[in-house]
Image 1 (cartoon, rainbow, N blue to C red):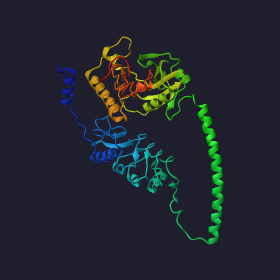
Image 2: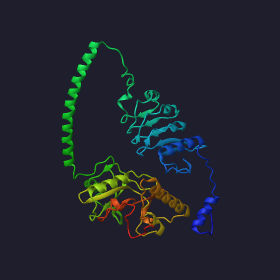
Image 3: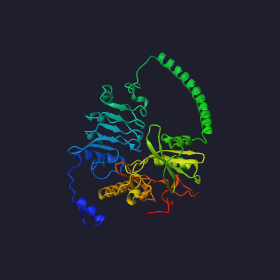
Image 4: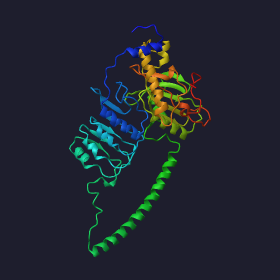
Length: 408
């Protein structure tokens, strides 16, 4: 398409003339997923759940037939509360549901067993009450359903939990014997529990003392400084340097390429503050944000380990810099796609994160490109994780980043 219009109007002209033939997501799926959205307050779910292709709602996978249908829902570690939404039963094409590691309560709805194509259900790591519905157990026993619930169910998950408390008549002699036995048992349990608490307190105190200056512990992956040295081959290959420190190319044990950002020793941030900030960044996930894989905080050594972006940053491609490799002149379709990707990443930081994250240093060198030339925003949320002064202000009030562009 040729046009003499400026770039922005040219892009608008392209969207006006382009024909989009994809039909909207199935109405019954839309009604069900909208109910789930309101139940769990998912403000980041906007527009059509499945379209445009490649931009489905976070956590959703779709089959792009005519019309598209929702086939997978992954809301693991999404801080969900309340009950498991019964509206899930109206997503008739669902094959997989993952609600693990949330704060869901109440009982498991048996209507989930009516989903005809459901093959996997993971509800572990919650606070659900009551037994697993027999209909779901039957499907699991027959091998048609992979059911995961081992970490969140109460002792009432056995088939005969209910009914054991039913009253029945017993002879007076048996009642007396049972009462005496109960008193003896409770006395023994009390003594045992008291001794156990004393031992546990000693173990906890010893553990705290021995790990006071150790490396970070979390369910995310921490690295020791020696591991950082191994990953980067003793910091052999530098790939950049920014306001927060130097960046090195490296590989994990499984061969996965990574980028390691090493902070200079001038950082004044404490161990606990860095730990909290690094862990908060590791739960920020979006297709247009560079993912944080792990981190290191050991003595004076501080580093963050990110996924590696093979096509460098946007600045290298816009200006065809001499020190950059594999740079190409971007066509207008690529530039438009990169702008959309960056906008979606910023929208998630501002509206999808609670509390919102303000980047404060968005510029072409902080927009990285995948091997398919899709854009991801880097260096978000670093105003506290890589603080170099004694300020205690939060991300939203501390000016961060390099002396480049700082948005109003």
